[in-house]
Length: 557
Image (tube, rainbow, N blue to C red; front, side, top):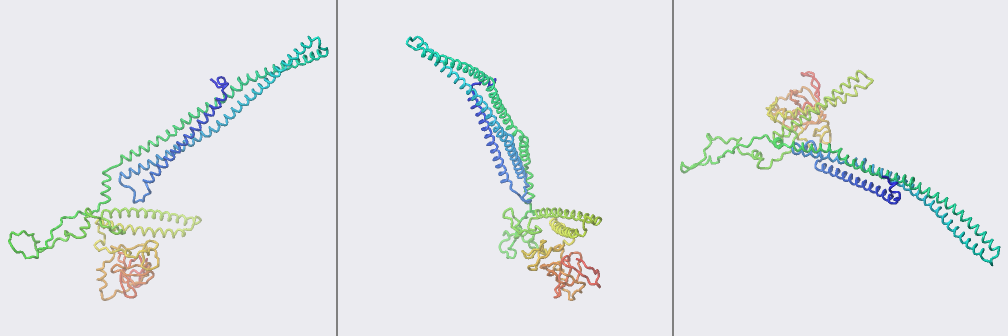
């Protein structure tokens, strides 16, 4: 069933129908556009929601509880889900909305062309009709004039009073009118035949072809709508597997919540390592009172031999402060060795720092090895580069390695102290760090402090362990000698040293001191100022030159 044969006379209705089809196509395009805008807004709101509840965190703020980890996993899955909604919006915009808008423009152009062809054909048929109608009217007029001339001629021919000239004139007029009527008849016949031919062509050839083109256009529009409906659904269908994985990830995160693991993390995070307080002993303050009255008087047994209560079990402020279960945990300043923390927490923090420093040390070792290999290559192939140009970098790397090893050693000593391990000098009372009391605000580029105002110095390559320094008692005993020790060398201070600990000696950078006792392996050298003041200084802080007549005459840093 075609429009050309069945709807040959419905040009105006087909015009309206095709316009409605294009309007419907554009309406559906608008629907798709609003749908993809909803998807874009939805995805944006989801991402903002995830960002709100999953802010950027530092390494120390990383969640450890399974419930928190699962929640952040769900947020990550939701973020991926939002990404899929963005994919849906993008696909709809490209494969559905964009395609519909381009096709709508093509349809408008094609429809306009077909309708113009139809109107031209109709105008040509109307023109043929007018020509045929004009010839018909002319033939009608000529016939009427010929009839009038016939009547006039017959009236004069029968009138006896009419002259011969009048009769001849009427006869001649009748002939002219009759001849004109015959010509008009022939013209009308020709125009009618032509119009009938054009009308047949119009309704059997031109209009069916034009209407067929309109029908094909409308059917293609319908097919295109069906394809876009399918594409609309396929866009959703393609993201369903990924969305399903996101939902499965959320379910997996929910199953990963472990209450026992979270409880263990709480214990691990807050366990102090202290033993619970023991029983409070009875402190008898009535022992020195004279007893009078009956022997049956109830009294508290005395300590045999007048022994005082065990100080370990006496109630002290320290013991009271450890009762954190019933009161607020006392706040302590943050120290480098974490001594303000409970033993268990201190051990974990020190171990974490040692692990971090070990990683940095390994990086420096790898860099040193790489530089040495490059230096060997330069030495074998001078055209590739100057080996000496790598020496500053190698020296810097070695210095960094020495610093890291010193830091690791220092933290390992603190860790051994926490774990109850005794070092080679563990029986000595720990002293404060050589830089612990340095004034704040005067820090060298490498992080060490100096006592010299308005002067910066680089950090020494190594500092002796404060717990391995000479004890004040040893210093006092040594300094009580009447005879001063002989000078065995001299040294120049490479760095300033505050000397605030007992037995240590204050020195400034570039200050020259006398050596009266060598380093015995503990990192300290005994020196004397020109003023006669004696004390210990870190060996790594000075450049030592021994006298030639003394043993071990060497120069080292």
